[in-house]
Amino acid sequence: MTRPSPDQIRLPFVTQRPLEDGCGASVLQMLTGRPLGEIEAHFGWKDGELRRSTWDDIIRILPRFGWHFGARQAVESWDDVQGLSVMHVHDDHFMLYDADNRVFYDPWEFEGPSLSTNRKPISTLAIWKPED
Image (cartoon, rainbow, N blue to C red; front, top):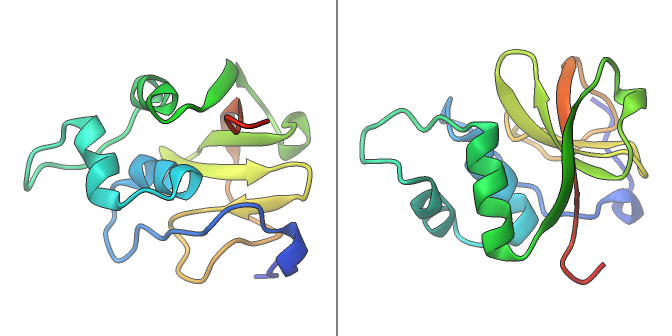
C-alpha cells in the first residue's frame, strides 16, 4: 500500500482495529479529533452492542461538531468524488476520501492513510471544515 507524503495528509488517522465495528465513529474521530468515547456517546450505542453506523447517524452527528455537508450522492467510481467526503463503500463500511490529494482514510487499515484502495464506492457525502 502506497503511503501519501506528509504534505498530502489533511487529517489525523484513526484505526478501528482490532475491532470489526465502529467505522462511522472512527471516521468522525478523524474529522473532529475528539476522544472515541465522546464520539460513541453521540451514536447512543450500549455496552456490548454491535457498533453499527448508518448514513442517518453520520448526517445527524456531523453538525453537532460544526461540520457542513452537501447532499448524499450515489457514485460509481472514485473519479466521481470531489473534495473531502465521507464515503460508504462495499462491505457496508464508512471511510474518508480526500479527492483533492487522492488520499484514502480507511479506518479498517492499521497503518494510516493510503494513495490506493481496493474498496468500491457506493455513495458520498461532501463535507467541509467549519472554518472553510
